[in-house]
Length: 71
Image (cartoon, rainbow, N blue to C red; front, side, top):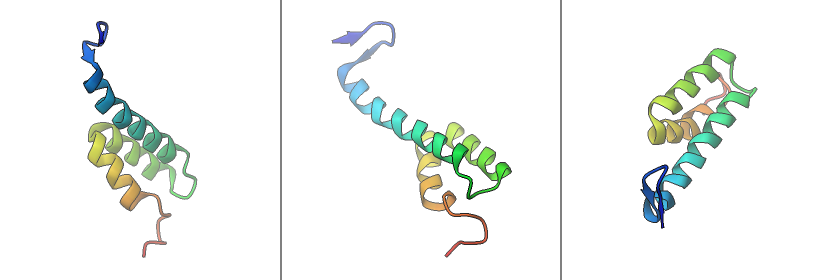
């Protein structure tokens, strides 16, 4: 099956869909995480959007904790 409007086949969709869901969830979490200041949320959002996979991974590794509570 080929999705003509996206020019994607089934395998591309199987690979792209989880990546997009991970990115969108990371972006949502960064935007709604009240444990980090507003400017840091904005910066994390820009990092996630500009470096899609690595930005999301970096957010989950480094960005979820509030500032000043790093271990």
